[in-house]
Image (tube, rainbow, N blue to C red; front, side, top):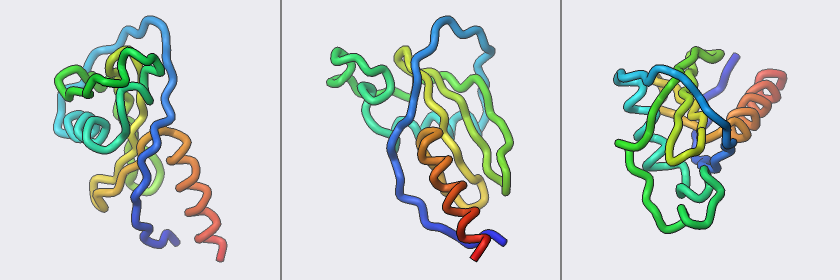
Length: 118
């Protein structure tokens, strides 16, 4: 049985990729994913890993969501491309909780399993 957990994590675990051909998604969930990324998930330098981006501000109009997938327990993930980097945002539409990046998502899932076992 899952117990509620308050979320306050924002570390971005992102990777750079080569050419990516995907159709952008334009939906209310895609807009939410972009808003979480831009407002809560760090600087462009954390995503692109290049010094020239350190002083630039991420802009929602430059973010492209190319996948939204269902995850366990009502969670969803959104894959976003912004400023040459890729990010994965995990969010729960019902609880309004979110995680920036796969690393934080895995930590949450592991903690959730441990809580369920006790």
